[in-house]
Amino acid sequence: MSAADLRITAEPIDNGRCKFLVSEPIHAGGVRRFASPDEARGSPLPEAIFAIPGADVTEVIVSGNLVTVVKRSPAPWPVVGKAVGRAIRAALAGGHQAVVTKPAASGSATADDALYERVADLFESQVNPMVARHGGRVELIDVQDAVVMVRMGGGCQGCGMADVTLRQGIEAMLQQQVPEVKGIVDITDHTAGSNPYFAAAKK
Amino acid sequence: MRRPSPRLLLLLPTVTYRTVAFVEAARRLGVEVTVASERPSTFEQANPAGLVTLDFADPARAAGQARAFARRHVVQGVVAVDDDTAVVAAAISEELGLRGNPVAAAAAARDKHQQRLRLAAAGVAVPRFELLATAEDPERVARRASYPCVLKPLRLSASRGVVRADDAAGFVAAFQRLTAILEEPDVARCGDWARQILVEEFVPGREVAVEGLVTLGVLTVLAIFDKPDPLDGPFFEETIYVTPSRLAPTARQEVAACVQAAVGALGLREGPIHAEVRYNDRGAWLIELAARPIGGRCSAALRFTAGEGGTGNGEQVSLEEIIIRHALGMSIPTIEREVQASGVMMIPVSGAGVLREVRGVGEARKVPLVEEVVITAHPGQALVPWPEGSRYPGFIFARGGTSEAVEAALRAAHAQLEFLTEPAD
Image (tube, rainbow over the protein chains, first blue to last red):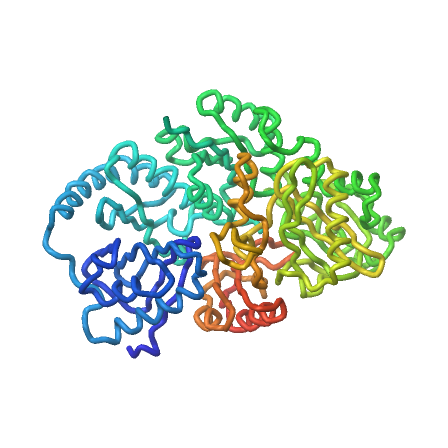
């Protein structure tokens, strides 16, 4: 597929966060989260996104064909998004890995591995049995720098109350039971949900 | 010692489009949030401070439930996001002594007939109106009706069931069509209002929507949106909203004065309002006023700038942040809309059927000035045209230098979209 054929769709969550869905995979080796330009060094795509002038990007998360960008700048996504799109196209056209594979376990990675086990236990024993009552499921994708990445499926994907489940349910439970967790990121493509438990119906 | 964050009770019906906008706005403000819905969350037992179930169908009962909740977790503010919860929020604010509207005012705003009665009595310009029972003989009523007229349900949202009639035959057809909607099980069980129809004079003219914030009964206009597609019927599905309005300054002042008069006549005291106003050579006419913010995803078309004169020098503030700050009595950094023109198109339903696929989204997003195309309908969802329907399959957003350019961009993006459907069973 040529760069011209590549399709990138932006799905802003709010003015600070936006997901970019790319028509071909960017990184097949699980989730990579970059919380600073230093962490991105060696990976062309996040390096380029952190370097977007005036965007003040604070976080880049890459998983499969999804790129989530978090920024501090008030610049609107239509402006920053175009630069992110260019960075994605350039990275994929470059012939090199857009995102390098996760390095071998460091001290922080070891801590993340331990957190992953605890969060996975919580998901299996409590979170998923709860969301299953509404036909949903929540997949733990990874834990990086104490930030939990999840993907929602079934009745949760595209559900009008998914953000309530994420913030008031899962995040609150993590704060209580795994307080070392610093945050939670939903990398779900909610627009692809075909059977949401609560579908928005009013104007 | 660190002062605890204020707690907001956020009334979110499970079918609202507004969840992310309000929950994320509350997070940005650092306030504690309790989400109240009419159906229980599966996490309610796990997070009893953050989730609660309230009976939205019975505001007095919901206020009692909120009182019981507030004994365990102190609540400093309550925010409603739609017509039904606006009355519930008023009942809760009265019960808990919070900033809000009197229940009678919110209830009058909720019911189109009650609203008309109050506005007409106060001298606010409204169409002539009459209340009918669905049990009446439409042919008999049609003989004495004035034309053109508009038949409306008293409470349904998003112009569902609103039909224009130009003659007696059209009246009978509209009456029967609306009655059939009111007899649908999800509507019929809602109360006596589902057995009544409001008939009112059709008011010609340009229609605008007014977004405002009321404080101590005084309206601050946040934005006036033009609705450039003529809303002349026979159905009243909305499409494009663009702000700033291209009405002349004096006309905008008349519109604002009309809405302020309606706020006063209804007795609204605090919180967001959304009003529909017609403007013609006889002045501004109040068509409807709701004690809630703009619906759907449309609030994303509004952005306020905490800079110098709205020039974008500072932090951006969403409508939801302003509403939450107001409810909690927090300072509001700005209520000045950004300098750019902005608009949203509620994507119309072109035909009935089960959605199979939406084509052209990528092309629509590439249209200059278009910021986002959001498809909210999912494959397999039944698309129902107006007047029976009330769900837009998606929204298009654009920003640019002028309202004309924004409107053109919205139309160009919409022209790229193709909704592929198959017949419903």
